[in-house]
Length: 233
Length: 399
Ligand SMILES: Nc1ncnc2c1ncn2[C@@H]1O[C@H](COP(=O)(O)OP(=O)(O)OP(=O)(O)O)[C@@H](O)[C@H]1O
Ligand SMILES: [Mg+2]
Image 1: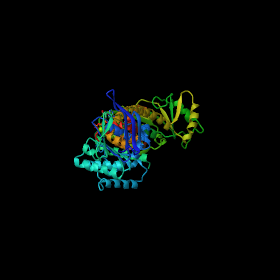
Image 2 (image 1 turned 90 degrees about the horizontal axis):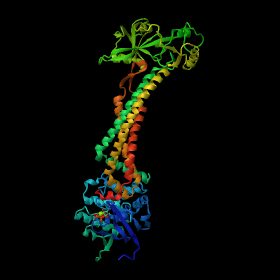
Image 3 (image 1 turned 135 degrees about the vertical axis):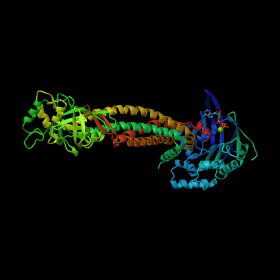
Image 4 (image 1 turned 45 degrees about the vertical axis):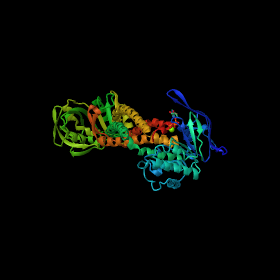
């Protein structure tokens, strides 16, 4: 187990409710969770259980109604909207289920987007973009447009964009949800590589038990709380 | 470049390159802005053209004396006694005298006459001006462009170039004005000014033909220098018996052009502004649907850490670019349609005056700015809405 390692992500007493049709629906009422640095966590659970909500809170896109949410040394629950945006830009990468690439931009330009938020020269940005495109096996596709590429390739562009600014944390919401088995395995292989060899902490939401096998551990979210799945390492 | 401007630039770029996705509604915004700009430019060009025609008519070196308490030629009357008194005045009046020391003055009357147009046969009321033989030479910038000036006492007219063109009046033609026939003796140019809408003839011949014996409406004198107008005014005030007004020809026409040009603008501006309000509502609608169309893209880059400012600027600049495109289109159209367009209106002396619409740089700038304002105002609210997109909801949608 991982209890002896200093937690990197720590949620305690997190509450979050949504107003749906005039009624407040509670998603989390006092969630506690710790994730150590270098972990690769798969989050599973029924639809509507709050997986995306959790991931959005970790990303600073959504914020808890109450409770504390700490990542590294930052208290996300105490930051304003602009501070959270800046924090995102420097500390995490997000991989979306539907890739969310900008169709008007080339592969390289899509990957470059997070670097525009950093004080880097055009040349420095190019070097970094080339490096991550090489890492995801898309060197030579830099000038193409994503719309013409397969789902697996588009998701690899999405991963390249998520890691181009070298964040410590990767958040993936059903990264293989829209992919066939073979493409999904390639993407998951890549995530495992990033976790094992580049020490990225990864939180991945998935519906796919096979995908969860790539993670170091799996958390089952149900009725607003976690049950850790025990499995042989 | 700061990271903020880099964010804004890439947002503006992606935004503009996604315009083909919203071709129809973006085109409709461009066209409605173009229409507003074109309409305003049309009115302003009309007012400007009118001013140009009338301002060109007046010279600051020509003095006009009017009688009877009016400051325009219509209704003015100068008794013969006044002219005798002026003639008898010795010393410097500030006006030119001939070699014999007599005042160089032109007594004038203006008679409205109906003339049939060659094209459609419709009659138009034109100004026939009776004047002394020195009349043309007192004025500035009058040149004979064909034939000769009228002979004293003869039923001859010289016709302004613009009228000659419009009514097909060639030298030697005979035309019936009132009850008698007149021969066209020549054409004159006045550099496009309002004078070109007049016909000039000998004073006595006009008086005789229209039963205006002895009448003088205005007296034109040549000032030795524009500043000597004051001197003439001082001398004329010593003449009692009838109220007299002395003003420069430039002021006479400027006052008239000012009234009509203001009227044109007074009509044009509210119409253009009303249309602009409609176009702004249209722009608002166009830009709101642009934000809806780009929701996932905006939310995605915001999730990557882009600031709200980039979302605002991306949308706002799109609105301004579309309005700018509409403005350019409208200006180009107005220039192509209106510039040099002949128009006529009731000018001086209740007679028709022709002028050309003038789409000048200041007309273009003013109407263009109105077009831009539509984009700036109509785009601001949607741009603000773009900064307030709920990211969680936006990211739930399929990218
Ligand atoms: N922005 C929002 N406004 C209102 N309700 C929301 C919002 N986001 C989530 N919810 C509600 O909160 C609940 C949890 O949503 P969430 O997206 O976290 O579930 P999930 O576990 O990711 O589900 P899925 O497996 O279908 O993606 C759902 O009932 C959803 O309708
Ligand atoms: Mg979800």
